[in-house]
Amino acid sequence: MAITRSTELSLRLDRIACEGHGACAELLPELLSLDEWGYPVVHSAAVPPGLAAHARRAVAACPVLALRLERSRP
Amino acid sequence: MTAESVHESTRPMPAVPADGSQPGPHGTRLLSGWFTTGRAADLADHLDRYGPLPLDRAHRGHASPLIHAVDQAGLTGRGGAAFPTARKLQAVADGRGAAVVVANAMESEPASAKDATLLQLAPHLVLDGIALAAQAVGAREAHLCVARTRQQQARELHAALAERERHRVDPVPVRLHELPHHYVSSEESALVRWLNGGDARPMSTPPRPFEKGVGKRPTLIDNVETLAHLALIARYGPAWYREAGAPDAPGTTLVTLGGAVRHPGVYEAPMGAPLGRLLAHGGGPSEPLAAVLVGGFFGSWLPANEALPTRFTKQDLAALGAGPGAGVLVALPQRACGLAETASVLAFLARNGAQQCGPCRFGLPAVGEDFAALAFGRLDVDGLRRLEHRVGLLAGRGACRHPDGASRFAATALRAFAADVERHLHHGPCPAVHQPPVLHVPTGSVPGADEWR
Ligand SMILES: Cc1cc2nc3c(=O)[nH]c(=O)nc-3n(C[C@H](O)[C@H](O)[C@H](O)COP(=O)(O)O)c2cc1C
Ligand code: SF4
Image 1 (tube, rainbow over the protein chains, first blue to last red):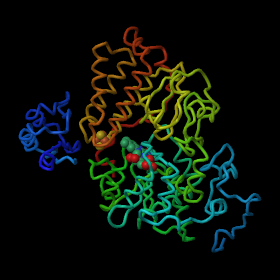
Image 2: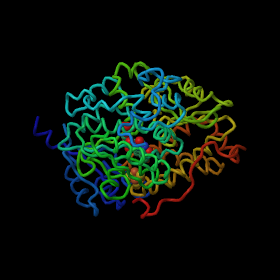
Image 3: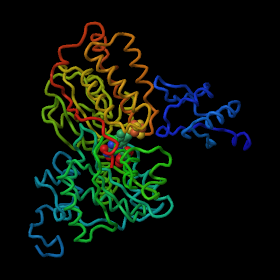
Image 4: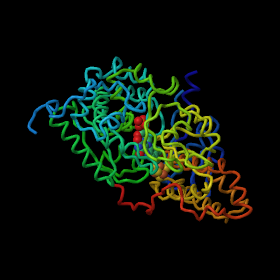
């Protein structure tokens, strides 16, 4: 099962780096939303395979590199 | 005095062979010296009572007898999270290269005085704990972090360290640091950041300090009381440690009793005793109680009838949404307004965040304002719903657990004072909001950007 495991991705948010730009939630509303001040609420850190491309785009869109994708440990 | 050895001091040896393994009056261990002599223990007192450091029991690695003993003893951290101390020791000992030990004496919890009391009365127990832990995790340096605002404490600890240096007690150098004193500057990653030359503000983790801390080395951070217990376990063993307390919550613990108790102050009490018994150490409630604040400003409100029979263990308290925290118990009398008390603590927590994360910058102040409106009868039902929503959104959304603490503080207040919430919503504030508060909440504004170094 090594192949599927290696594609299990999870979101990691650096709360100090985050400045509340909100780009991530726009591109990944399935997993992220914003609070009333524009800071992200992570509904699920685990990224289902079907959302991997969206997640990558959300990560790339953060102007302060506060959002990362990590391979979750099995 | 010119004597080389402190044992040659002019003080007579105690008449009873003072093996510190005998509990002192009231079952005290950490504070038994104080109850016996009535003065702070200097190095001579300390050595008379406990003998020299048992460094031979504390070598590094998997076979470390000290780590094994701490594990068997079931010692848990006294800085707030009640994490098993042996697990942390082992993780740091297993890390790569020389480790570092940091003793957390910051005691930023305003309702707590136990660390200051311990350091004043039995500083050498804490310093022994630092030395033994350093040996067990393979550290070549150790740091003792105190609050810059407590100059007297810093002077006394400098003197105690100098005395130990003169008598070559410690195997590794221990440096005393005076850090800026804000509520979150005592959080472990803030200590690491400060010791590495930065601001005393929490950092994003991972890496956690045990992986990569001071100088990027594996770093053990323990509360000073935890280290003092460790120094006794190293001498007398886990079976001795477990003679006090309960099987699921062994040993003794320092508690700070405040509010409506007859004799507020710091006491040493068995772990696992019902909270009512702990309050009895301070003479018990001085008037009828509405609630007990367990764990201080980082803690939880429990209705008095629920709190008093509950045992002081991590598990029993967790079942009620609370935890032992740093051992603070504040008894809230029925005449007080729990909502007003909560509002003033939340305002304090909002002022004292490190202003780095969204929840700290916006969520905490908003919750504090909503709560003040509730206490003063200015919040309607929609406002209450918004408050509950905001409280629910604080937890788990900061780099450190400061917003989690504030969230729990607010949520447990809404539950413990549910009847008051109804009354305030529909009939305005109770007369008690204009009474002097029970909790002493420090004033002061949000620290400036330059006040963290
Ligand atoms: C906001 C905040 C403030 C803290 N303040 C203290 C403190 O004043 N003293 C302390 O020992 N631990 C404090 N802690 C806990 C430390 O981060 C750390 O867990 C503790 O020192 C570990 O020691 P222990 O395992 O012996 O409990 C605080 C944690 C947080 C989140
Ligand atoms: S949550 Fe608050 S106190 Fe903790 S790191 Fe973020 S800003 Fe600092």
